[in-house]
Image 1 (cartoon, rainbow, N blue to C red):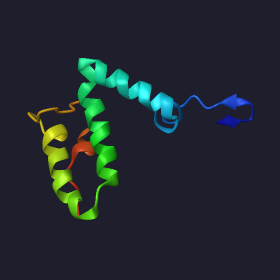
Image 2: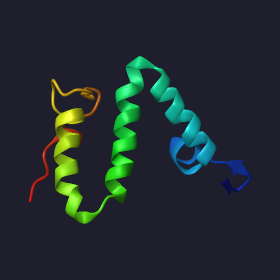
Image 3: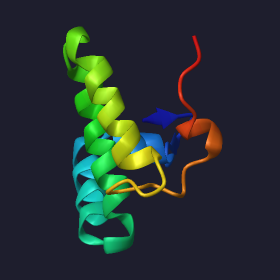
Image 4: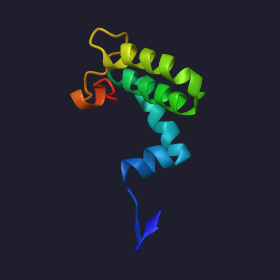
Length: 89
């Protein structure tokens, strides 16, 4: 993206919006043991965004137990308490 002659170098633009950047960053996450859980979480969140409404609650519960709960199979301890808090309302 061009803005006043300067190229956008944000993470979102390079690793989320650009298909090749997204692919390369995802491969980087998957290939580094310390980042594998983050890569898996990203993939699961994208799947969640595209799943049928009837499947959302069950998938959300699996995401919570797998990634957000201490002791989960791929706990993402780097996430803030606010990011992993159960939904209210």
